[in-house]
Length: 323
Ligand SMILES: [Zn+2]
Image (tube, rainbow, N blue to C red):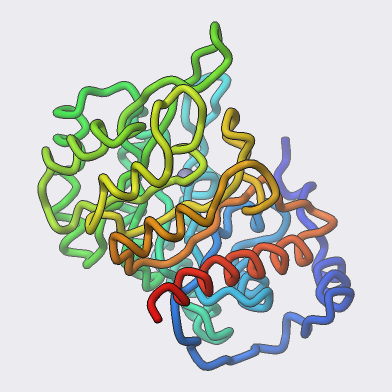
């Protein structure tokens, strides 16, 4: 399928901005950095319908403080059906990738927001995909991000995943970017629910962190994944087990069975106890949404506004616990 056919013409983006009472794209709304916990969202879902440059602007206009640099459909493309990768038709797939990352950083800064973290290409089990991980770390640094989320290989033993990350760490350090790995899941089709994978429960996640044992190797907890039936854990339990090594979040909602990636508070996850557990461990990272399935082409701007509202609500509840 040709990606460009799915993109929204600029005038339709402008129309959505106007309908939501927001300023046009030419206007940069410089704002002072807010106090309290930073809220962020990934730009991958937005840039399905526009390009990253506009996506960063829209995330800023919707009220987020930061953007999460998605690099998994633009740097290289993995075809789930054929299980093969192919080069992407995108600036991040060319030799000019750093200039593009720099440009996104500038657009963000012009609009008063920063890049807080990124998401490297996956699945990491694919050798060619792994060859892009250093590029993802470089782009994160160039965009101003401090953390790059890199999936472990779902089915690898802890020692083999630890070896992959240990190999990347000297490069990550030279970029000044920490690697955060994420809790994954497999699917048990016979029983119709999730099944264990690397880092899917506290024991497995802590085991990998301990095996690598480096301050540049931290945890990104995907709250939705942690709540899926069949994994025998919960987001609260994972937060407590990860403690001070938890430095990034992927926040979204689901029916506690499927990986729905929906708007928080719209489905079955109880976010109150999660926010309290984050307070208990002195979480000092950002609140980053990954509710990508909530984003629709015709309602792009409205969806982003809804997302920033719920992210702000969560961050405010979390910040209120500190007083
Ligand atoms: Zn995630």
